[in-house]
Length: 420
Image (cartoon, rainbow, N blue to C red; front, side, top):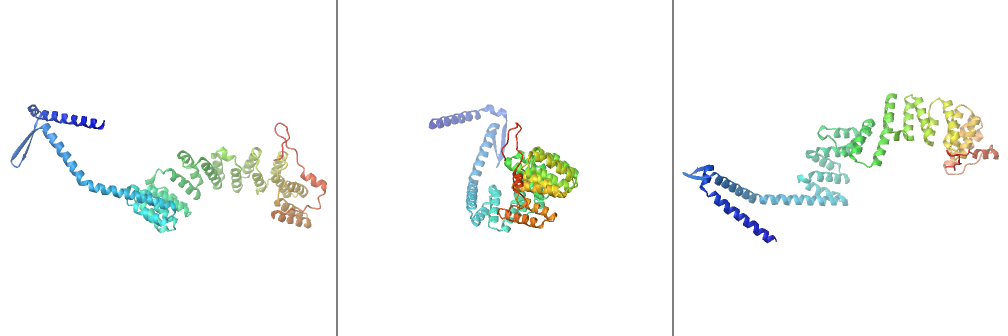
């Protein structure tokens, strides 16, 4: 089939050549114009179609001559390119196997080829960093900046972040010549902004990071929470704190960690009512022991209101160790030692730990009962060591049973709920 097709094409070309020669030999073509060339005292006259065909043939011959003359150079260029790619592949394999010095040598040699120069220099820099040669790594990075400013900025920012210098990393990423940044550049810039104490600016880049899908959704959610908490901590006045709190997603604002950061910063800025209100609203909807512990430890004077809220929560959470400790702390602050002692015994019965024993010792010491205070502190030390504390001789069996008893918990349908 191929032979028949080749024969057919040859016959068609020959027929076209014969017909073209006959057409060019007609005298009527002189009506289209003539071309006269004088050289060496002779005149060469041809019709316009003949002159065009001669020019085309001459151009074709010149092209064939140029191809013949350039073939050795092209062959040499192809050979160099194949050698460069081979050195690049060998260098990458050596880098993957941990042969740092050999990999760097091969990759540096492969960087002579413009097509693979960028990736070869980046890999050579990695090899130099892996063997601890910061000088060579810097030289490779400097060479990368001559032709690839974006890659140079990305790797420069990464090196600055490794040295914990976020401001220098931002300077490298904010160059006008490399804007807009690629997805990895946005990621690095967010990290640099967070380390530089500019969490608000980093939080503003989350939308762009989400569109580029440069990181998994779980990692992005964790980053969002981290930046939100840092943004709250960086607020320098109550207006900024309120504005930061309002822009946070509802999923972040409902987290106890975010509420805790907001409350601490609000108290530090003198906004006590907002701090207490945020914790109380969160505990009403989402019970959290660590948040309740913070609520009890806040250095504010509103003992009565906090104690009233804690008493209200006790009806729904009678076995909460943190809540019992909070009530004991509030009672101690009001010097109601007997009530504080009752709450602490109940907390100890609910496995409140060494903290409850320490608070009970402080309660006894405030009442002048040094022997019982020493015994409580000794129990706190023993419990931290994993040893069983000794019961106080002051409590009789009925009181000990009463400490263990808690109110029955029921669900929304009125059925008893098992503990935990």
